Image 1 (cartoon, one colour):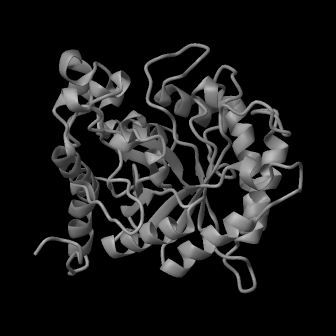
Image 2 (tube, rainbow, N blue to C red; image 1 turned 120 degrees about the vertical axis):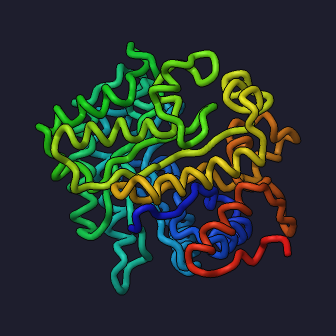
Amino acid sequence: MQSPDFGAQAFLWWRPELAQHDLNLMKDGGFNWVKQSFAWETIEGAGRNQFDWTISDRVVKQVNDTGLKLLARLSIDPDKRDFWAGTPPNNADAFAEYAGALAARYNCQPGSAGCIQAFQIWNEPNLAREWGGQRPNPVEYAAFLKKAYAAIKAGNPNAIVISAGMAPTGDNNDNAMPDDIFYDQLYQAMGGNSTGYFDMLGVHGAGFAAPPELDPAEAAANKEKYGGYRFFAFRHVEDIRKIMEKYGDTGKKIVLLEFGWTFDEVNPAYKWHGRDAGIDRTVQADYIKRAYQYAVANWPWVGLMSVLTMPNADWLNDGDAFDEEQFWWAIMEPSQQPETKWRPAFMELCIYFNSLKGEECKYAPK
């Protein structure tokens, strides 16, 4: 994994032809990694050890054949309450078996079904809605993570295990816990030593209303403009790095599992740091490129930076893509085959990533 490395989330699961279209764009665009959700309920939904590998085999093969590396997010739809394994933390043993089965099947060895290079263990456990409706608990997540780590390493000792990224929030109650507090308590639960828990620390790094270079102290001080918390700045990632340094864990990298900027002009929860903050498609493109450039210049400890997001054509199904929150974060316009609808963000990244290799973006206007 380069430092930094270039990737994006994509939607490869249900539409094979669109999956290949987007993978080709990412490869040509200079991306090295693709992040895809391997939802537990879609593979082992029928019951314990009843695996349906049909779609996952196809997705892994498509990614491998395109020449990209694959980060698999392992989690479950947080709104699903009737799953046979139950919810976290009580489903930790069953989840570890699932993670181990994936790692063994896609262990990158001759004769295997393919190669998954990295695994993300759950998503945003600092939110109750992602943690079985219970109060976020770093001690419980540490135990959950340790079991999954051991199972994955048994299936593929060379796999990279990445902890979940935490949601940015200022709430500390039964519904949520601030990410910095969660990470600090996670290290305490691990006895200050992440060995046997993760290989890289997962972090979420949305930029909100601030440009990527803004000091988090300014975001905290200027509530009217930036929101009034340090996590409202992209560089809040540096706060999490300081927690790693506090516990002497400087030999491991941070992976930005999600980051980006939205230009949302519809949804009230996002409009304030989208259109109302002056972020349009062009500003979004500029900020994302500058975030990568800032990391190149200042963050030797960062690995993969997975930007939100390649588009999902299913956003168009109801005739109103605007109501989809992720529509406004996406770096491409959702489109049906054979159309390709560009956004400035993809084009800027394609030009930038290819320039680092002394090459040109094949899609750039001449």
